[in-house]
Length: 532
Image 1 (cartoon, rainbow, N blue to C red):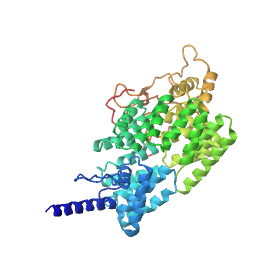
Image 2 (cartoon, rainbow, N blue to C red):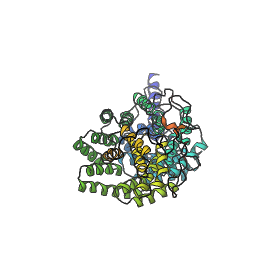
Image 3 (cartoon, one colour):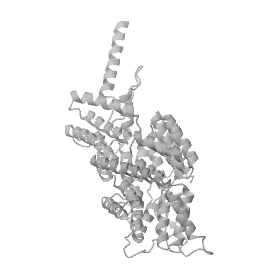
Image 4 (cartoon, rainbow, N blue to C red):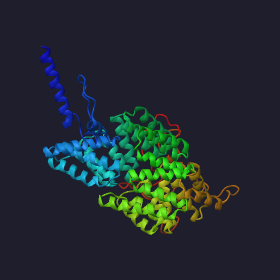
């Protein structure tokens, strides 16, 4: 009898191991790859493949060795089982994750082929949501937010209760500047699920709305609940970014150092650390960290930041080398289907042809990419190209939608100063330096020079002291959340008069709507503790 029980136990364990190896104990990407641990007697600890399935499926950070193991496992399986739609979707999602982790966009065409192969075997969002959700994730990675929205909404329509679809949709909506839809998606996500992934997404949405302390609280909670070193590093990185944006470089450095202790190859935190070291005048260390980050993950945005650091130090030759690296990496990324027009436009505006930057950004605007980032970049490019009047509505849109950015405030202040709007210009330049006095090694000194040029506020205050050339105070936006301590981003100025005959009407808050820029607030769930 004992021998029989032993044989049964061994047989059961063999089945469990086989199920784990073939992915039976998992569901796929964006709600499909979420690993369901076995609760039987003495299950083996999840191996790297299972850990990667769990992380990638939930949209959570994954460790590079685990993702590599998952790719090897699925590639070997599919060579013998090419009709396994689920495994093709798993492989496609793993390629997307590896491409992001390695900053290697060459994995994105491979991901697309695997995901479309999955759909060829089993078509339809209802029958094969994993592949469609994987294509949405891939589109986000390529900065093709309209395509990500299309795939994500198709999966949501097929199964509204699939929680892992909503983080993908939130990223797509944010990329399009549709913050109302992003807020609604967050409400739905929070009603369906909880955990570190939801906390991380909530923190990002609150940050974009300007609710910094609420964003920090969610990131803190995600840190406490982090189950892996990579999740811990991601939460610490978020806290470091929030501290940096508040103009607290020492706190930011502490968070980034902790993130790198948890996950030494967390390149985002290494680049964040370099950014902070610049603000602390530790430029040699900053240069070393940037170079280390680029050596491991040659992202073009890192090359831009290092180039600007070199330029601020008078090292023009070194700066040019980084700018050439930026051009090379963006060219490679474009060949792999990645849209780097925003980054290229930012580079052209300050280091090349502002007119070319305007052309790039207006093309993105027509495609529906109308985020705060694109609004700010287009405003600055128009200003640098000599059309401050046309730039101002875009600058207002960037600063009035919530996120507190020293860079956006600086850009708006300079645009207003060029238009003779001294009161608003002074207010926004002061706001930039108050938010983060060392926000840029190149631009922060210029912000201080501009303030000195404007001089002190005249006695009694100018007629446009309220912000836009009108003697009307800011009034609550009709869509502002009803909470007594709502941040200033939930308020908007009265409509501004046209500043030039060529100035456009204020861009809409969403590519699918005609909402005025004065009411951009997304109806996200009001945090329980509004501490801002």
